[in-house]
Image 1 (cartoon, one colour):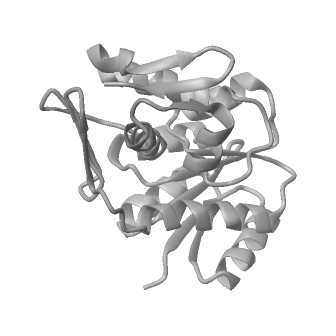
Image 2 (tube, helix red, strand yellow; image 1 turned 180 degrees about the horizontal axis):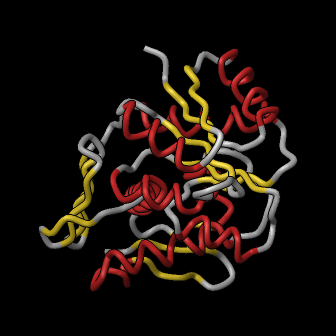
Length: 223
């Protein structure tokens, strides 16, 4: 069964461009011209594997659509935008977005990111259950508990925590974390990972100090 991708953009030309490239790569693609339509399609379909949202759309924008989807689903979300200011990128991550792509971009690069995200979701892991310091991460069920209590993480937060726990006690440079968790060559600064670490720490509560900052390098998980 083909993986299904929802593309929401108010520009028909952009929708058709992404539709063509994704279809040629073997994906089933459905389209929405605004945030409201995207939400209708997402909740009506029930089998969407990844969502691509443009920020500036009539009615509900991409941020609003991402927040509503994230309230009910951990499906990966890629945000498209012509904006490049830090505050807009941070707003996207705070809305539960996993990837942030600034226009103009290469459609082939975007397809590669879609491939990487869905490949990581479908990969069989040699270790499906990780446990450290009261934190239990179940890859098969895609669930995390802290001292027995469930913690709701986004797709990228889950991937980041899994990577930290797999490398318990190892100092990890930011660049290595980005290339391993995001699974593509990241051209930009480290605010992407710093933002996700901040949110992850807030959700881990008393266990937040398991993620230690190594100044000038990156992070280390130690429990």
